[in-house]
Image 1 (cartoon, helix red, strand yellow):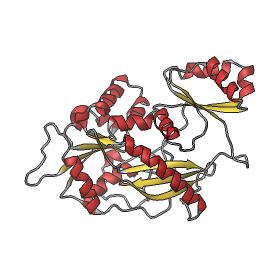
Image 2 (cartoon, rainbow, N blue to C red):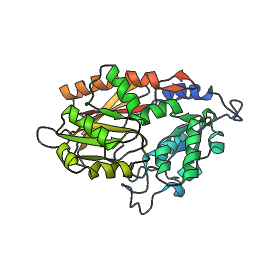
Image 3 (tube, one colour):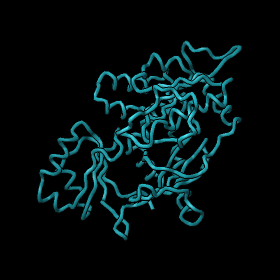
Length: 334
């Protein structure tokens, strides 16, 4: 998830598709939530908190709640109005007869509150975000809410964990024959000597390490020359101490493009189970974001992304049954 501007026309989901999807949620197992009758509305909780994914100034809902505005947004990017809250407000505005929207900040999230809704959509505030608050009680409650089927969270726990625990989807894609960068999977804590031994066996001149669970924005990453780590064992020893709470890591060759720059990405977006569009994001130019133009690169990335999405469909379930995801982003390095 990267804070970059994307200048392009946004796809619009037709009302009939929204209605079809909500029928599935309306039929979901509920506890103490009405499921029909005169004036019935589907209650949808929206977990918010993004402060780096803004909407164009002037397009915000005139009733955008003050509670959800990011004022003096030093840690984020883009101003007061962001996409997670805006999507919830747009849903309510487009279908006032169908939806009742419950916007929540991280502090609002409790199992009791989530159970009052027919479905809760996690647009940002997940377990990983809760961990950043350094509040064990709060993190425990958010984790319990994600795992509790009566909270009717989307993504549901099994699918959510499949996505968040990188070895899950990476190994599945590798098994399916999808090209993937060579990776050493560490899943029982970081042992510097053992990791370095495996790297040397691979004969990698440089390598890269990052945590593989509940982490984002490059947190906990380290890279360098293999020989430097051999000559100075304290580098990896200190890294292990700093990340002792982590169990899973990915170790990969540190690879650059022939021009010496990091790889760029083509991000493929799937909406309601169908490939919708792709966006080029430059690896070094923060403003280098635009819709991927037609051509061989776009076609090749789409083909790989569609193969990956088939694996997504094997993991995505709602109330134990397979479901097409509302939206997915699959990135392909170029």
